[in-house]
Image 1 (cartoon, one colour):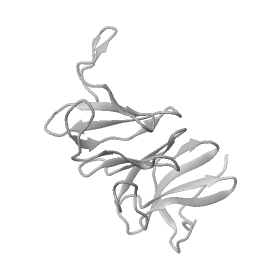
Image 2 (cartoon, rainbow, N blue to C red; image 1 turned 45 degrees about the horizontal axis):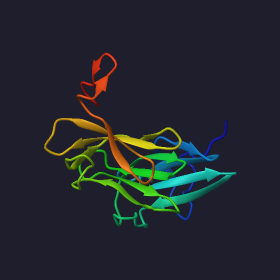
Image 3 (cartoon, helix red, strand yellow; image 1 turned 60 degrees about the vertical axis):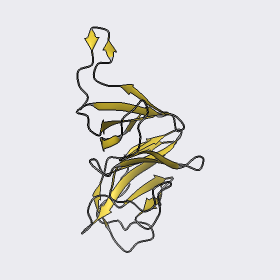
Length: 173
């Protein structure tokens, strides 16, 4: 077990020490984590620790593909198809893919969702190491939908009413 960063470590390329950390994720031997600084709201960057070296993946000085400069960042999911970043859990949220191939917005508040509806709120993203999933609330609907992407296609995979072996899915939280 090894410490990757704490509140006494300066962020790469900055004179500021880390002050807050989000949930980390691991892919291809690297640890990825969102972090922020004292006096900032939310997480202002995503960082990578690999082979003893700490680097910045994206921070408040960068533009996110398909979105421009957007803060705060909320969660990350590292998968074989790239690093996915979620911003803002509620309104004005997004999920964006940061990868050498096909970077760009996956889902953005106010834009059309697959299978109808418009993206509203966003909940924490997760990965199985290959695909990435997240729960989104569609605008003008009380239902949440579980979405998944392989880095190229975005699909709705479950919503209230989805058949289950002993009935149907009632809610997603």
